Image: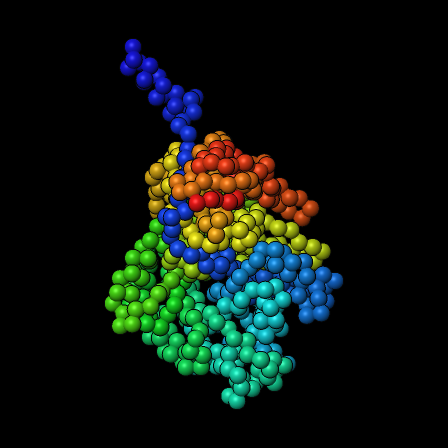
Length: 522
């Protein structure tokens, strides 16, 4: 009889007729991972579609200031607290010549990456002026496709040299007497990709990037350099070979290796799609190991970090007429996309010791959290998790134990023609946490499409102390989207939690991202 009862109960639990055991999140403020760099919450502005023209810059518009900068966009960027913004590309940069876009005489060029005319009315000095207005730090990528190493050196001189030299004096002549002091410089973009203008194999990229780095640091020794790591994960590519070659050849010169990842849901499989941040985590661990190996071999060991300087959901506006021209890549995001972005941000925080930079691609209109028209703008679903992280997730990342139900995915790719993968034991709760002084912040994605998950949150060292604020990003269903005059997905403040012991219980809503923030007493 007991055996029959056990079999029946097991069957009932497997089909969801009985609730499973209580989920647990265990927090120990002494189990730390690393300091969270604010640059994890960076963004990206490329001369692509309406990101610059009609996005951050629209001279003559009643919505723009005296510089032509869209005021509504600037306010949204300030609210997002973007610490670092990569510019000017992207694929665009591999045929970009910065001298075309400075001074009174601008040189219009065809942009062959995205099949449009680039007027070059917006360039280095306009971007720096805009960046100061919104409070973000510029991160420039140099052209190592069709550009020369000397051209890269001249750009650093134009931006960072005090005066006396030709290009620093040219900057002054253009109306900028003080150096821009650009700290972060990328050594090209996606040079492993056959789609890239000036594409190089790994060995040739190392040779060119090493010499560019040498010249650039001769001008400005304290700059930080970011090498182009893997962006090409298609079935015929060998990203591990590329990354290892770059680290071995450039380890002495660089401060970061850049990785790129875009995901999609072409097959409309929610549970596969929502698990894609685990692929990012796996790739992070592989490159972490390569970095550790390389640092041990260096003559003067120094840290090398990972920069996920392009990441996002991108699959709807990826091909054909949606991928080029004046309105290229205008992805319209839903709730499930926002949950994937929250999962990416959790990955960055959980790897805060090695991931020190990340840049969502891109800021406005082009696969972006901010979307404009000539009359106004709205905030896409992906804006809200990034805003919560940027405004609250600070301090030291914690090693959190999560105990909850799991699921397995089917064989899938991420919509980018990448190598097929399959995930086992995917936890329904995806969690990161941070401590900053006596303040603790916990970020939780409930991947379950239909079920709230009641969870005990346990403090392993000390106790929770007082009221905890709760913020939730959610919507009516996973396909809910925002639009002009319609906001279905946004951040909502929920009722506070009273916690004065070592445990509180919270039920995470289905298909939600939740941030819980309060005090911990040791």
